[in-house]
Image 1 (tube, rainbow, N blue to C red):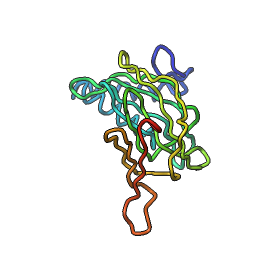
Image 2 (tube, one colour):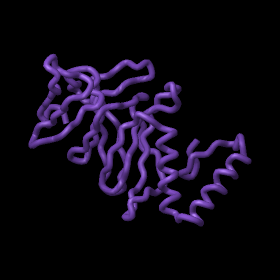
Image 3 (cartoon, helix red, strand yellow):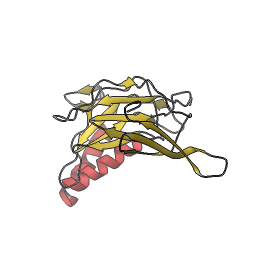
Image 4 (tube, rainbow, N blue to C red):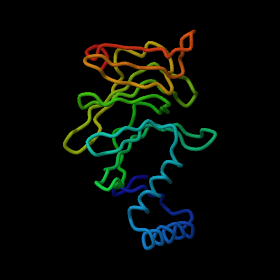
Amino acid sequence: MIFDGYVNQLPDTDPGETLEWLDSLDAVIDTHGKTRARFLLSKLLERARESQVSFAWHGRLYAAGGTHGFPVSQVLATVESAPIHPDGSLGAWRLENALPAPRFFNTPSLVHQDRVYLFGGGDATFTWSTAILSAPLNAGDGTVGPWRTETLPLPVIHRGGAGVQVVGQRVYLVGGATISVNGAPEIGRASCRERV
């Protein structure tokens, strides 16, 4: 549960373990400083969440969707962001507008004209989607606006590991899990006015 901007488990089911973690964190801060402590916390968050899509924009780092556990025990719809400090450390994470449905990604993201676009991904049943999700990004405070599904889907299902770029008024989706018969990467493209 999120309360006062922090993740809380009420009541704490293991206060002794919580104290051990806090004592360990205090020891890192005392010995190596807050920057190292923030780095370690970020690494712990990475372990707790996998297969998310991430992107950076206007001094913030974002994580959307993903999974908990292995094998996958939960597919997430949450979107979170944290400020990136000048020294490269991260500030406190906050919740943003959730995705329309739980989704995990091995797919690219793209920020174009103050909107973020997430391409494809899978749901809790490992069904792959051709959907392109997008949401506005607020330049003032970095918040993510409401998500929508774009009207034109991807031309093929699941482009895991693909790259995406905008050149002029076209978006290019390059390679990924779909490969042509001759082994060359398949390239999809669309007009930015049509798709993004």
